[in-house]
Length: 483
Ligand code: SF4
Ligand code: SF4
Image (tube, rainbow, N blue to C red; front, side, top):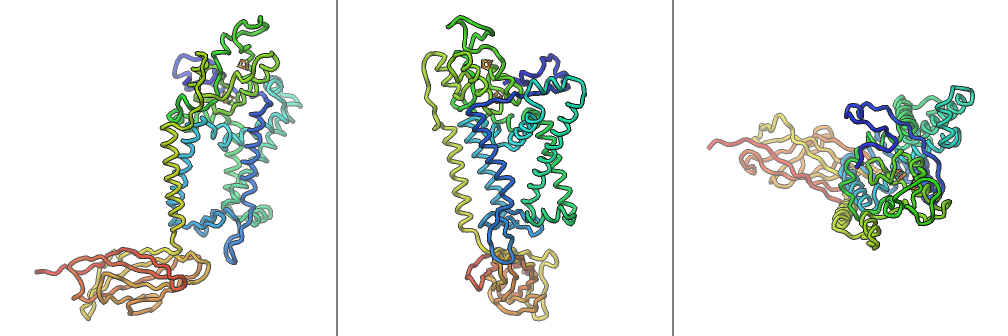
């Protein structure tokens, strides 16, 4: 893999590499099937991003009706029919694991598809480049204007471009905020000046990030900031389907008119390089900077068409097939390989675990914390009493009454200090809907029923409406008797 792109001047000293000036990339517009497919993916991604916060979802009275909402104030994540509490954070971990393994699988099959088509950096950079082209013209016009004097034409075009970029960035930052607060409400509040300070701050932060990364940093993010290109090579092999230059028929390359049959098909026009959004030359082979977007394919196909040569000199293919073609044979695409089977198995396993865990997800939650001090007290009656903080999660929208009892300590009597319940073997604890109830529960045990020191005790919680039961394993502390 080369460290630097074609557009970067050659340097010998590593110090010079670190401090070399950025070589600005002026990608030329291309037309063709790859570009059309890339536009389609871009439109789908942006539509989902901007529209999703506006999709409504009826969850009943007292609950948000936004389909996807990460409600930080109420510590809840709503995703259509699913509701996640902070206690469900491991589902997010599961989702991230699935996303990572899916990325490994897709990369091993089709190279950096994610980078070339659906990565937010690529999508917004593409959008910003389109704005730039519409206002400032294509590559040659932009290069000429940038190297020319600062005149009225340059000022108004640059000014308009940055205004539109800023508007897109602002819209993007605003849309991001709508995933955290109700979209219609925050839109009204934002414009009438009543939104909270964090809303304005984070909108500005995300707008600035979008403007800088998509407008200014562009390919520098992929080449220098993103860790993914560094280790994606570990997922690729000679059977991965990636953008490839058919050197076996392109070389030896030569410019100008040639006799039919003389030399390779590459006319060394540089169209593939000027079309590349990262400014590299795919003819140099697989490179860290290549995001596998395929725009060089469209560029080269036009050249091949114009010069009467067979198309797809730059194509999607595997290195194994390219090597075989150079030798006059062909290697069919092998999707099923040990590497892809491993990734697919891991993905299926993670998905199965997630689905089962979601299906069996309890509707209530219980947490019991034993008091740190005192560990126990001895009552006047001689009984030993331990104190616990009990938290009950009621995930239903309405108030519920939960019965709590203990197992493992014969004759244990429970009291609730704040609600003044008990002493009794079972307590009924009311918890409002969509909330966590916190209770101070004392458990008293008769000395005859206790073992020395500590012993296990189970707290059992039953929802009286649904009959659902959950158990929390804790410990009951007592004195160690001298023998
Ligand atoms: S070399 Fe081709 S596929 Fe790779 S980034 Fe450049 S245009 Fe995209
Ligand atoms: S666009 Fe095609 S013909 Fe032109 S330099 Fe690139 S590979 Fe060669």
